[in-house]
Length: 257
Image 1 (cartoon, rainbow, N blue to C red):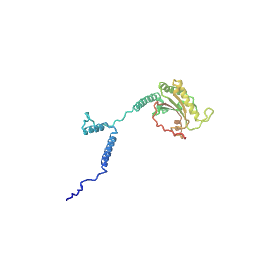
Image 2: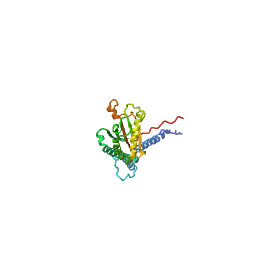
Image 3: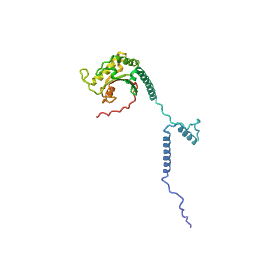
Image 4: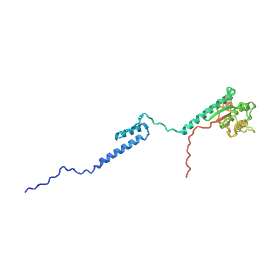
């Protein structure tokens, strides 16, 4: 009697419990590729986006965009209507202030040639700097009769304008002390007020005017020489720009709890 011995199946392979790692790795690769693509198109470049869209359509058997794509399309800046409007306003304001400065130069031409009046323009506005010797006697704040005509010519230009006007009085560093003006503070302030009163009488709206006395604290020349001190004794009429330069607001610290 023969007994058949059971054959061992050597060709049986042991079960692989880590096969899921292959699928997981493929999934992670696809996920990584997806995020790379999303990052690449996040910069909204129209040309590159349409090229990518057409490529995906062709790869999956679809049809790409029928419209030809200009691959040289660049990212265009987003228009800012507020910035554009402000730029246009600044341009018009500068042109208006330049015309005003030219009119003042023409009106004060004789005194400008003599070096007794200076007309300047900057971002703050237009400034007419008048030597005090043209307007006042030494140590006085009453306008001399010959100065009234020149100031009225300036007032005639200002009364048809709409900008605010600041009149500044300046002195040299020589001390003054008398019953009327105890110091250069009073003298510079009263001189500025005298010019403001004349402008009001000539028809300039009082609400547009400001009088400021700076005493000797803003010299434009050296006070060690007579010529420098004469240069520092002045009245500056500044027509203020209606659109000041933009400034950065610095937030204050929060109050302590």
